[in-house]
Image 1 (tube, rainbow, N blue to C red):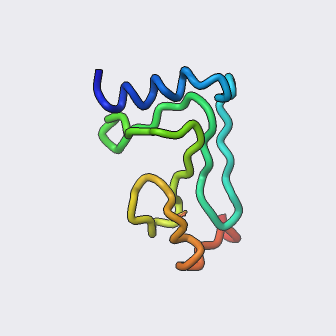
Image 2: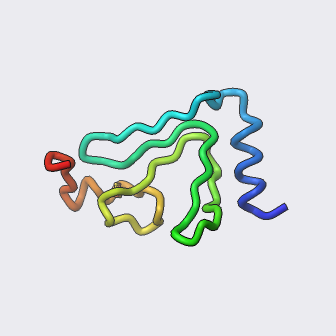
Length: 82
Ligand code: FES
């Protein structure tokens, strides 16, 4: 078992995880992912996930890609044109 497998297993075993995944595009912020969704990089390799709810950066400013680190607030990211 790899670290990524372990991360996915812990997400799946959490009874609080909704059975139907939910993805929410936050105004002026990240994409929030709740539920059992595998996150992979640009080569299809699993990205470790340790929480049942994660926020994916869409401003491009994060220091911990693919996850949001809150930098969108400092760089003035806006979804007004999206
Ligand atoms: S969306 Fe939050 S750091 Fe990019």
